[in-house]
Image 1 (cartoon, rainbow, N blue to C red):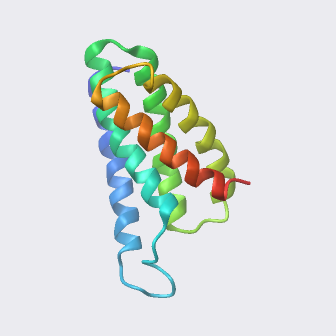
Image 2 (cartoon, helix red, strand yellow):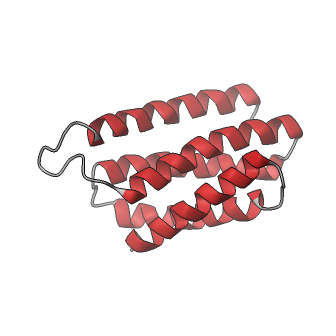
Length: 134
């Protein structure tokens, strides 16, 4: 994956996340708009992952970029399912848990702020995933 592809993928995921935020913040109609820690954690993971992938591609940290890329693709979907309170959420949380743990492990190998922020976001998301995972 080149930097351009990563940015395009990131923009698509952010658009999807923005759509999910719009759904969640549409007032308090039938439970919509209630705080959703898993949605927030997954969205934070996506944001941190985008920054991390860009940094890792610039620094030729291929394994970290790959782990972050897979994480933000997974967490973008997780955020969407969490915002919709989907019946598939527990199964997706189980997958996201493993992906976030792998990404956290890879990012912790690097001392830079982008990787550290991504690792911390992944750790927080993994904690939320454990609460929901099937």
